[in-house]
Length: 319
Image (cartoon, rainbow, N blue to C red; front, side, top):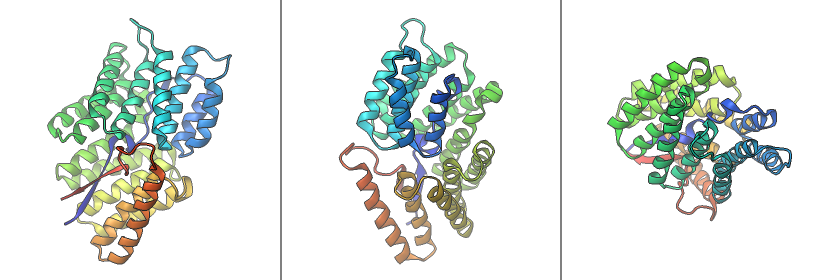
């Protein structure tokens, strides 16, 4: 029986909604570091900035939201939750919610999905979407709706996911250049939905578009580009192009190894996906060796931080 790996939607591509309005260069640089797979460095910068007496409450709120995002990427879920709670408290302006507050809600929703709290994640995303809609901020609304579509996919509500994703695409087009960074997430979520609804050829098209978007936004040697190669490789294999899938996954793993290293959840889950393809190709011993080592390393990374959280950034499903 072939193992099918589908990316957990917030793990595919980082949330860009908060970065779109960051006026402070230090915060913007920290966001770039997280996107490049260097959250630990960003954590140090953001912690110092968040405690700076010269920073405004709004700036500190944005810093804590980004800090929570960095901590989540490091699998420090408890600390991430505390940072998001602080961010929401600092950014809360009753009666006049801001785009930054909506972004922080979106970030927190991503953590709740990893912690397997879909009800709370939906509530946070609904709040964030209502604020973005009220502000007529098409770029933010597009990003938030993509994540809501991902939540629907995770709960196997595929018809609802398709409807929400179509609305997200409409908002994406209305946003113009300001929503350009959302394109990998939009295409990637479309690919995820196509895989799970047994449309592998469409999934290849969607993930190829996500890869092109990442290459255009970030270049070839970037964590997100490597991740996009992995997603494309899985779709190619599902579309009966196993050799092409293996090549794409090897390319993705090489990029991740160069950019974020091997002791990283993204790299390790990429190895799990690659081992599944190796197994399908007949390399059973090599596949077993890689998957056993990767699973052991993933368990070590998570430790006791969040026992109920997904051990992998990918859902492992049997078809």
